[in-house]
Length: 114
Image (cartoon, rainbow, N blue to C red; front, side):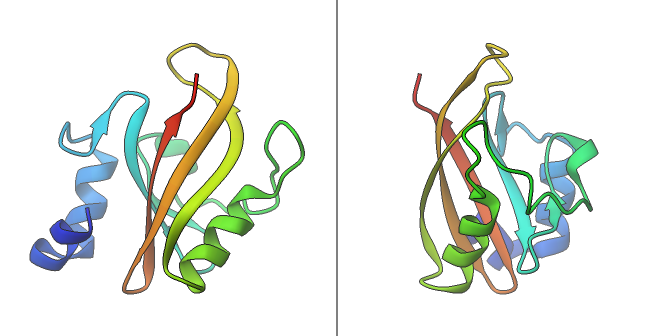
């Protein structure tokens, strides 16, 4: 994703994520993009785009989106652990998401642990 942005630009990356391009979306494994305010700017689940879910916690009450933005603004890359509903199973499961800042956005790709 980071290399794609450098070659083709942020607007093209947003378009590819939002149309569920298989290069960036493989079901439960997908790429999303957030701005530095925490607003989702690209996501395969279109209902999330443009929304501010920063204060919506995970199943255990963790404000994980705040942590994602902090990682992006701070060291610029790192993992964030939380619990989220797995779209494949429909069950809440532990998830780890890698956050990588590219210019003024954060790319996010997570994996369910179960």
